[in-house]
Structures are given as C-alpha cells and as structure tokens.
Length: 201
Image (tube, rainbow, N blue to C red; front, side, top):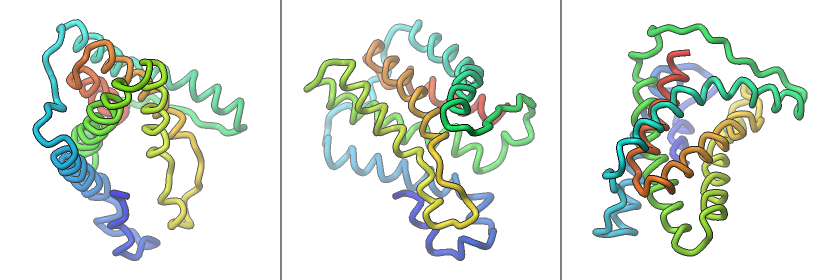
C-alpha cells in the first residue's frame, strides 16, 4: 500500500523517483502511516518499551550479522523446492551504503515494520493466543508484505515468493526476540543489523 505513490509516474520509465529515491519515499510513507495508526489505535499506550536485559541487544546484533549467511542454505532449500537459482554473492563493499535508498532500507523501513509487526500486531496477538500461534501469525503477515506486489504493475518484474520466504525466517527470529525480551528494542536492532549486512554484502 505504501508503494502506491509510484503509480503517479510512468513506471516503465526509470526516473529519480523509481530508482534513487524509491525506498526512501516508501520508508517515509510507511513510518508515517504506522506512527499515525499507532497514535490513533493505541492512544497513550506505550508501544515502544526499550528497556530489557543487555544480553537481548547483544544476541540481536549477533543474529542480525549472522542471518544473511544463514540465507545461503535457505536459498539452497528454496532453489531445490522451486527449481530456481538464487545465490548470494558475498562481495563486501561500502559503496552502496550512503545512498538514500540504503539509509531507508537500514533505518526507516525496519522501524516501521518492527513497530507495526512486533510492537503492535504481535503484542496484541500475545494477549489472545499462545506465543507459538501469535509469533506464527505475525511472521506470516510480515512475510506476505514482502511479496513483490509491484510486479502486478511492472511488466519487467517477475512475481515470485523468494523475498517473502527469506522475510518469513527473519520475521520468525524477530518475533522470538520480541517475545523473549518483552521489548521492541532488540527486535529493531536485529532488523536494522540484518538490513545493514544485506546492504554491505
């Protein structure tokens, strides 16, 4: 839904909005939408408890750094099931780090997604369901938003579930971290570190 703004442009032609600023604009819209939604729905409730044991923050950093490497065997399983050929090329570099899109991917988008999926959805589900069910539902919803819906509008893009598949396992880790720590902080740090590593490699 946040990416609907792209329909204002001729999406078959590349321009600054569909290339260099796409993730930044999406990130700003997503974060603003989530903050507004939380303000309306939760009113004065604290959705952002950050205090927790430091070990959860350390574990989140380690998990965020490690998860891109775990994606290699996950890709192999996906390739085996769907007869595709996804590979991660580990070519470390800082050149992609200081772009507007990267800043959005590393900071804005994780903030919006963690506030919504862990700070709101999972928190609400945990009041009504067993942790395994609550984490499972929020993880599935998180994975579904990572399907390439823009492929419906872009002829040059293929619709497949690879990103949603990878996001499912990342969302599962984030949900477990949130549940164990009882804080949005560690799951946010995990997501930021994971996305940072993806940009770096």
